[in-house]
Image 1: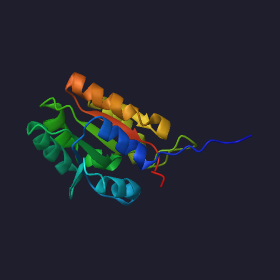
Image 2: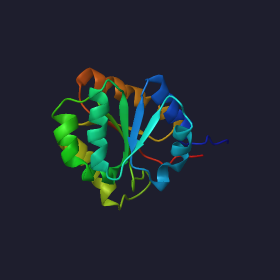
Image 3: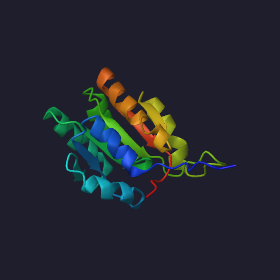
Image 4: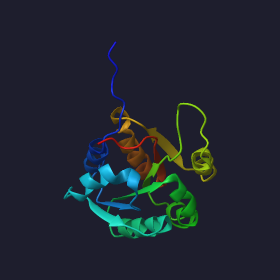
Amino acid sequence: MATQEVILHPASVVEELKKNKISHVVWLPDSETNFLFQLLDNEPTLDLVPVCREGETMAIAAGLWVGGKRPIVLIQNTGVFEAGDSIRGLALDVNQPLVMLVGYRGWSRHGLTRDSAARFIEHILHAWGITYYLIETDDDADRISLAIEEAERTSKPVAVLVGTEFGS
């Protein structure tokens, strides 16, 4: 019996961003997104905006949005906790249609999830009334488009939890 490779390639994510005419990726660089960084850095239709702290991503994305651009934010689940007040004050209170690609650090569908960041993220998103989608494979990547459509339709932030590390 043949097994199918279950992986999320960065190219699948980049294609969804391009398909939806995303203009900027505001992110805090980390080792888990290195493969994605390499593609984004070489993609002429997307501008990368690195930040020092996750809370900065919301203000920068809000400024880009007010200026008529189509940003997306890329941070880890721990970054959502750090950016909480910015999410509340900017994304939620001003009805910003923002998609947050969130690394689901510490999460596993196989066995016990010991990392508190993984255990808390869905509860935090529920408490804030933020809808989220889970992606783990290339077949799931189209959920990014669903999240973008929902954010635009509702004028609210929507999260996409990335439940796996990117493959090369």
